[in-house]
Length: 187
Image (cartoon, rainbow, N blue to C red; front, top):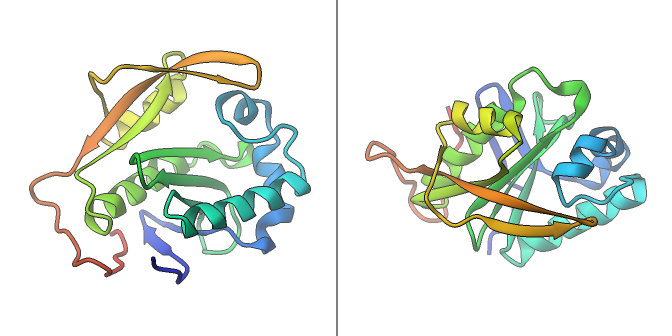
């Protein structure tokens, strides 16, 4: 398993792995009622939760389960997160309230989807979105995802049950797949 830090660039963004230096900035991004409602992140999300999250993200990558990446403009200041599950190729994202309206979710989804298709050689990747999450559905559409016929799943988290519907993005025939073990950056 690769252990070098992953950095992926494209669409004016740099996606990189979380570091301990990010911990002080993370509560501003994720200690938010919308994030708490729509994601499995701890709430309240303070620095202790952030440190646990960074350590968990590091362990998940080492175990080949998930890849968690900070969304940045410059490779430094985190503005949100995008992640991909490696066993079930499902992506997820959250952008800090102060940074919304810059198409960060859409652009990061475009970058990580291309990376998944080219560098990870995944022919299809998924999103799971609640029916009433119009903002996330708009991001999915803008990034080329489409609802698929897969059965929805019911999740119970933080005392509420909700249904997640699958959206998919399939690799196009023009997609160039990188040789195994080669890292690629998005355009």
